[in-house]
Length: 342
Image (tube, rainbow, N blue to C red):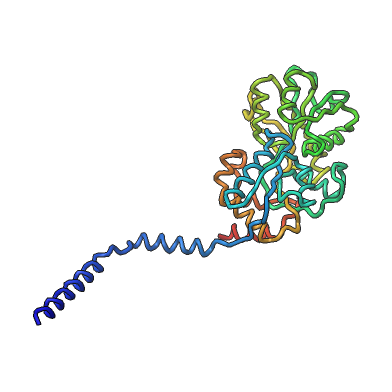
């Protein structure tokens, strides 16, 4: 009987301890509950898109110093951070259109002028009409730079006849834009001695006065041109207003733009230029889920991308969705509609 009483007392003590311990268990605060619910809501809102299988090849520029190459490298890194096996290659605006159209690369940057030329068949660099390539995202404005030594007697682009001019490779957006400029000024490529080189090589040619002028289509600002303006006394030629109107009429992809004073060393005034939007292009047959996965990866890593490519830091999500007159992948349109409605 005593043993039974002791057992009852022990069991009662255990139960009492359990109750007291349970009552003292910390309960989540109101703020913790709110944060937890918010996280759950965000997780439920996040879409599961289809990550492309295999290696993702992203196009860059014809040289490591081009803005296109930095853009492509940052995008490839965002894909890698999202779990894909991605890499960037040296290519160029024209080559990126060809790669996307022929499905040898997933995506890459190009200029709107090059994409329009690919649609219209006005550039012999394209082996066929590439109307199966569309925009996935729009980035910054790529300006057309004409650079000459500061002591040059070249005052306008019309003075280039018979001169030696260095520009990008024939597969680059720079070459496409140079041909457009020459025709507006009443010149043809054969009226000049055109040399093709990377941006670094072009800098050396100008510095050593091996060429009379340097034409390049690139962003504002560009690290390679900054280096050139810091080490060599050069001037950037503006486009005259009457010719600007002609270049804008020549292609719907061109837009007027201004190089703000002080962008480069020795540039003390605003310079009137023309340019075109940078577009990240993909094949129009790329599955919707893969396009949305790519865009979600870029948006999630946008902070990293704008640190690596500072010229993109002023862009809004609305800017990214605006490809101008160039067609955009239908899945990208859906993605931006949903993103901008939040």
